[in-house]
Image (cartoon, rainbow, N blue to C red; front, side, top):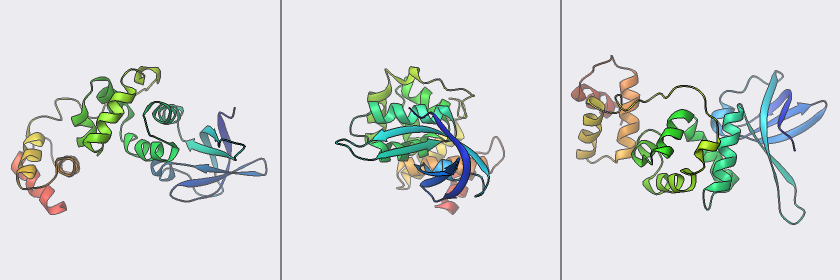
Length: 202
């Protein structure tokens, strides 16, 4: 079983990378979050790998990630979430890499609101992720602190989200926009100012 490729990045797109390993070019499927962080072509790169062999004598596909944590999370989602193949698992991971610690906490706490508000999953997908992973999420070791403590998710931000929802915007979009607005504004900004900034983006 291949654990990782280390070599020269030959080329890359938004969802693939070609790694030159001792003169052999391996095509690797990657999430968008990995594509954004790849070095320039011709530079050294290391990708942690999941192999997938098609049934009935098919070809081998490779899925690559910048960290072992991302690789293990991808594998867990693909194996444990019903109806989730490799492509969909890559799409999910692209959102989850905003903060693996927060995603792990949300699943452990069965917090669908965090999954929809911060990570942008639909309510149906959030519930499916919780049901599929709640008993398995502890098998993946995730390091680092959470970004969004319960305190930061309360107060003016929640008021701003509620205000946008009252204006007719969907909750997931409202939360994402308020979070972006809050990141560019001083600590302690009141809800009304957050709503004004969010409306400018919307």
